[in-house]
Length: 114
Image (cartoon, rainbow, N blue to C red; front, side, top):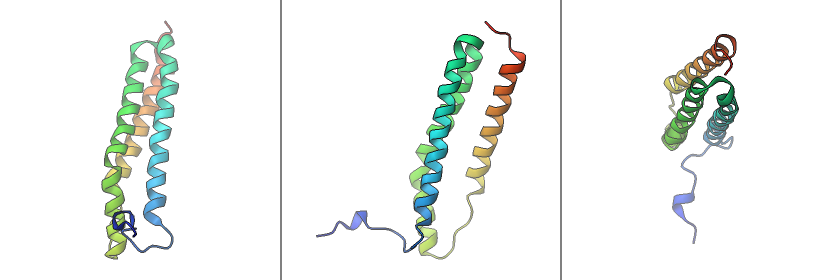
């Protein structure tokens, strides 16, 4: 007997919700990787590099926490033939990346080495 809970909640042969889910997971993994790189900066730049690690991990954790809701929103949007773009989520990630890049540039160019 088939388990109905594991059945797809949409009828999309292109599997758009799954591709979007994978893209968000890759973004989260990239932020964790960036946090690991920033972690290597801690002995050289001190506590300020630790804030970069914390921000990267918080954004990655935020993506992971909201991923299930985003997936179900996209899957139900396909089923209902009406789906709006996730402008807030995309703008938040873009803003986070810009802030992390600016802080990283500030760290390398303006903080003294310890």
